[in-house]
Structures are given as C-alpha cells and as structure tokens.
Image 1 (cartoon, rainbow, N blue to C red):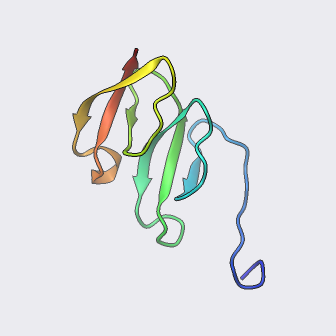
Image 2: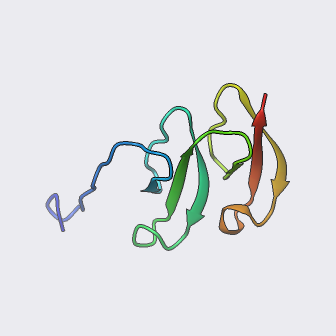
Length: 88
C-alpha cells in the first residue's frame, strides 16, 4: 500500500505494554513479555514492558542490567516459553 507498494509503518514512542511487529527494536530497559503469531498480518507481534521483578520474559528478550532470568515456564509467551525476571 504505502511507500510504493513496499508497505508503511506507524511509529509510536515506547511505553509500558506497547505491542510492536516482529523485527522492531527493543528499547533499553524494556523486555518482551508476550507474543501473538497472527499479529501484524502474520509477521508476529511482541508486547514490551518496562523490566521489573516478577515479569516473564520471552525468548530473544534482552535482560537489562540489574536483572537475571530464572525459572523457565513452557506455556509462557503463547507457547514459546518464558523465564521469570528477578533482581541480580
């Protein structure tokens, strides 16, 4: 549609709980907390959250300084699996 048939993207400032399409950058201090495979017209969508103790992080999520990923939960991130975030 936009950009001579390549497609177009809408940009928003990062905020706690925002959803983005796969391949979007992850802002420093944020982690990926959920995934929808059908989001973004099949590309997949990721939910971002400000890192805090007790969140579950998805595969590929950065772990910010001061945190560590611990116990694995297979059902997290819509079946991709997730790890609990704790203080380092």
